[in-house]
Image 1: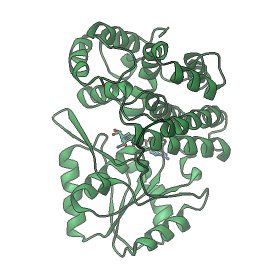
Image 2 (image 1 turned 180 degrees about the vertical axis):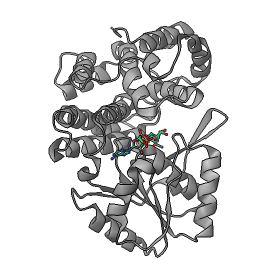
Image 3 (image 1 turned 60 degrees about the vertical axis):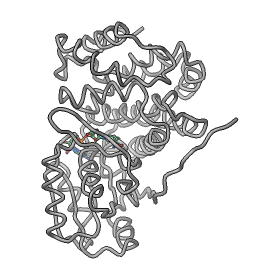
Image 4 (image 1 turned 30 degrees about the vertical axis):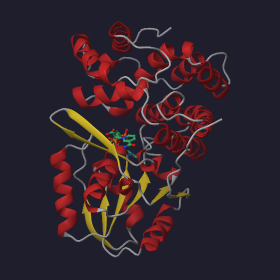
Amino acid sequence: MSFAHETLGQRVRFASGDAAAALADEVGRLGAERVMVIAGNSERDLAERVSAELPVALAYDEVRMHVPVEVAERARAAAAEHRVDAIVAVGGGSTTGLAKAVALTSGVPIVAVPTTYAGSEATDVWGLTEDGKKTTGSDPRVLPKAIVYDAELTTGLPVELSVASGLNALAHCVDSMWAPRTDPINRALASEGIRALAEGLPQVVDDPAGLPGREQTLYGAYLSAVAFASAGSGLHHKICHVLGGRYDLPHAPTHAIVLPYVLALNAPEAPEAEQRIAAAFGSATALDGLQELRRRTNAPRALREVGFTAEQIPDAVAAILPVVPDTNPTPVTADDLARLLRGAQEGTDPR
Ligand code: NAD
């Protein structure tokens, strides 16, 4: 066995029902005195609840999906003007993404309080979008210094969004099985992530306000992000990255829809991934497990339902083909990609 695995350093707290105290402690550990609290419109109430005890210098709410550069520039200017010395991001991946954009140029430390299952809080990956092109990179400055997970903050996340977001996390796990830097450690984390998400998500659907399902799903989302940060972007993330940035498709539903098609393409050539994923689901095959979870949670089915048209497929294939990882277990041709996108666009059976 021979591999090099990098573990990212951050404090991680699970504090169900106790985010305010845990957050005050984490901000105190940084010695911060002028905090910028970033939260989007539907996250503002949650942010006010958890930041009441903090030395808030600026409450900022101009959050947009995929972090347009002009939005990032305005947030950076506001942070500089208010001389903030810490950023608290309360919200989903878009909110964490804006905090990362500010940290990238200023070095101001972030404490993340996630309210979806996107997992951005546990990665050192930033993303910015300009003229329909999303650029990503990794930088240690954008990795939050601490994460505070409080399942109570996610009980108001609508079920449909919760399912899409949880399947986004599942996609981190599945793609980690064959991503360019995959190794036994991130595959082990990904396996446990799949198990936790498959256990938690049906509970979230049955009892959206209940804590046990939300806690399992948050735990799985964290593991998924750690695995993904270590393994890097595999074929699934490359496809969704192009679709999200180029056609402005919603992030989590796009991941939720595309995943079974990538799994169907790769699993036959990736026996260890197939075996691990099936075992984590407790199902006969990896795809059976994923499809059963998708059925059970009434997951989104077709890209046409989120605004992707059949006419856009050739353009998407041309944009994805050059970024297909050469480590992908299955060699991928333009025809394969066109078939995959046609299936996902229409929502047909991936088998
Ligand atoms: P999002 O952050 O856009 O949130 C979706 C919607 O849910 C928003 O309207 C938000 O305000 C609302 N919301 C969030 N939490 C809520 C709650 N608890 N209750 C009610 N409403 C709530 O979507 P997302 O899927 O969390 O994140 C997507 C973004 O994150 C994308 O831009 C993606 O590229 C990025 N991302 C980055 C990484 C990374 O490692 N850099 C990883 C995953 C995702």
